[in-house]
Image 1 (cartoon, helix red, strand yellow):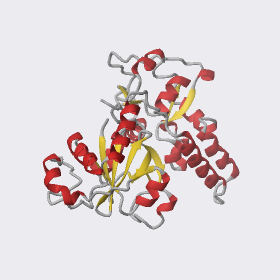
Image 2 (image 1 turned 180 degrees about the horizontal axis):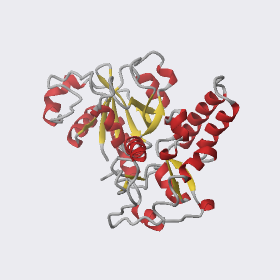
Image 3 (image 1 turned 60 degrees about the horizontal axis):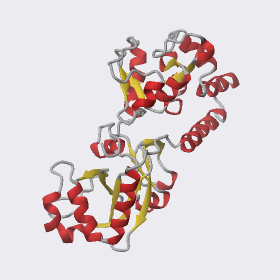
Length: 329
C-alpha cells in the first residue's frame, strides 16, 4: 500500500463527487511533470489524502490503475491550458468531518516530509505546483492519528483490499464511450467521403484498409509466430482513439497478434522496444502470462521494427503500458 497526497482546490467538488482523480499528461509546452507522472504509479488499494482550502478534506481508496481519459466535461473552463486527453484513476472517496489543517501541526509533521516532491513547505503551507505526490507511511500515520477514527476506518478498508487480488482491468465502459464519441464525430464530418468514414470506423475494430495495410508489413504474430490470417487481429500501437485519421489507417501503427497477445498488448500488460525487446508490465500476473505463451523468465526479442513502427511503439510505452507497481510492492 502506498499513500498519495492530492491538491484539489480547483477540481475538488468534481473529483470527489465523480469518484476519480484526473490530470493532464504533460505541462504547458509538452513538458514532463512528475506530479502528473505519479498518476501512473497509483495502484488499487492505495490511500489518497485530499487537500483542499488548506485542510485534509477527504480520504480515498484507489479503485483502479491509471488509464487514459478525456478531460472531464464538468471541469468547464478550469484548466484552460490543460490538454484534452489526460490520466484518470477511479477513487472511492469519503469526506471528513474532522478536516485537520496540516499547518497547525507542522512541528509534528515536518520530520516526515519527503525530501523530494513534498506536498507541503517546511512552514506547513501547501505547494500550488503539486497535483499528486507520494507521502511516507510515517507522515500518513501522523495525519491519520490527527484525523482520528474516520482515518482508521479508511486505513482498515485499504489494508483489507491490499490482501486481495486487485481488479486491474481498464474501465471498459469509459473507453467504449470515448471511442463511440470519436466515431460519431467521424460520421458527422461533412468533409469526409462516405467511403473514408467507413474505412476509419472499420479501423477501430482492426478491419478494412487498416488491416490490409498492416498485412503489407507484418505477416505473423511476433510472439506466437502464428501466421494464419483468420487467427490474427490487427491491433493499433497508438490507440485508435488517440490517433488522427491518417494514423488510424497507417499500417506501421499496427501489429498482427493472436487474440490473447492482442489482449495483453491492448490493455498495456506488454509492449515492445524498437529493437524488438519484449517489455512486461510490473503489474502483469506472471503465471497468467506464462499460460498465454509469454516467457516471463528470459529476455525475449521478437525482431526489430521499422522507424515508423518504433514511433508508434514509443507512444504505446508512454501512454498504454501499465507502469504502476503492484500493491504492496
